[in-house]
Image 1 (cartoon, rainbow, N blue to C red):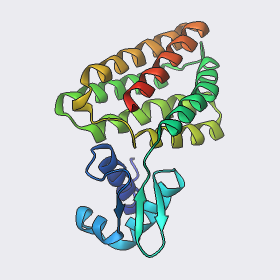
Image 2 (cartoon, helix red, strand yellow):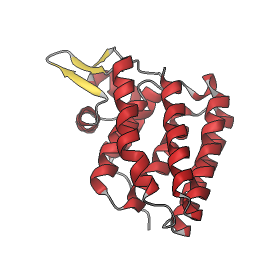
Image 3 (cartoon, rainbow, N blue to C red):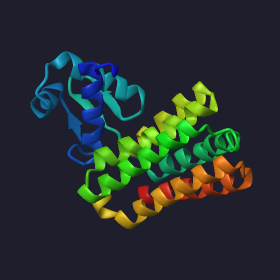
Image 4 (tube, helix red, strand yellow):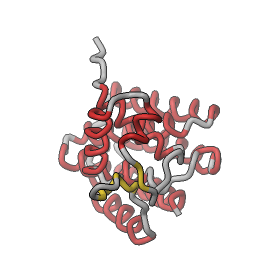
Length: 209
């Protein structure tokens, strides 16, 4: 049975998607009351959701003013990409030949969800599915610290990634690479996993610039 998500969790997801869809803008300051009007819920779960997103690097608090959506600099983007190269690529390579069929099918489902989101220009749904694709692979690797840390980095990428309607061909290529990564993992081709992981990271970096 699926466990209903808490209001805080729903608010966190909704605010994250407002960032993705550029309905709230990096560098701008927002108050809890503004989010109340946008989401139609009480202040407490919104405040808790923003605190969670602050811990993930998406907001910075400003005393007596509200919260500023972080704005990534070129240096931030370069650091995120380097950290992904150092952490993400090696742990995915370690999954080569060990990918369970159920995990693969879950990831194929997320790729399908991304494809469907491209058709409807739903940036929030696209990047949610993208996040879940990698979170599922990180979880399968068994390194929960890496999973948590890489998840934060991927959340921060949302601050700079364009809306999907602005870069559809690039995001279509992303989905192709994700399918190829699954095949390489299934076949136990560690060198190909490393190569595709690097291409995916480089592609994401270009999308953020």
